[in-house]
Image (cartoon, rainbow, N blue to C red; front, side, top):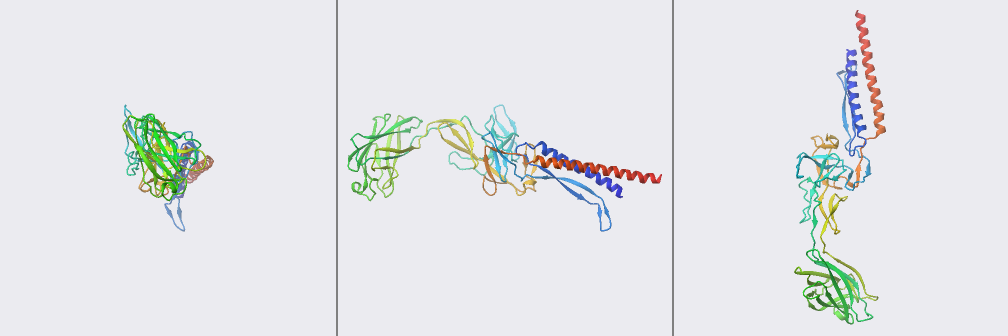
Length: 437
């Protein structure tokens, strides 16, 4: 029986080494495939009968060993939308079932997972990798800014979108006024604001000292209707003039106002705001001009030196056209516009498994969940072991060519040895038959 057992065992050895050879060849072929994970081979001894005094040879079985949790080398990519994962986690992707003549895309409901992050924008505005898989994410509500973490959908970007203009409603003005100006000529600064259509308008703030520590600011615009002058306000500095306990050189109170200008009342360290109502041809537009805080040197001050405008900012925005998207390390997909504004469209989460090596391999470096892998856990990048995103980079195959060539030689030697065992067993069997003859 041992001769026949040897034949059976050697045949199983040939089969096992053939399986190992197939895995090795697959690994070598995919050594440059982005996001590919090596498939190793485990050999298991199968016995028919074994005791302390007798052992009947059995066979050997080869089973695949998946190394999905082994990190590949992260390398920089020329594609700014490429993504790599440092640590555990997989991208959530879908596969398209049909792309209609109008560009309408339908998707297979099956959820896939991959480490292949060489994403680019296709003609329909979807983020697609080189395997044709569509990146999924959590969409952001453009009204509330909230991320909808209850549903994963393919991320689509509308390249024809426009950024609507925003009328200026708030502005911050910071400047220093000299205590003793050299002349009575008003000290002026011209700043820019926007109306509801996104048109830019000049707003002029002219400062004239009317008494010690007292200034009158005249706010005007050549585009204001019906008069270019919007109104005036008196600004009092220091404790003596204002009557409020503020440090010298800081705003202590507002005096009289005229026209379409109103001023906030004094509160300790509260905002010193002038509210104006302008009309640039689109109806009344209210703008709150923040001059800093009462008693603080964070806005308009009166200190030694010459007049200087330190800062002006406002929240108005002109219209803008789409210029492209960028992906941030926190997974935010951001649309950028020509007016310098940006909008977060979606967030890319990562999915982890208790046993990623038990995932079922699919075409295109993709995987599906199995009972053995455990349920998917989807988290924002960097949270709960989900790994971090590396932008403008891809994860290379985790195959080491030198190791695979060594395994190839070992598999070849083992295959040859098993073949030699079969030949030897056959010769022994032939000798036994010849003895009978």
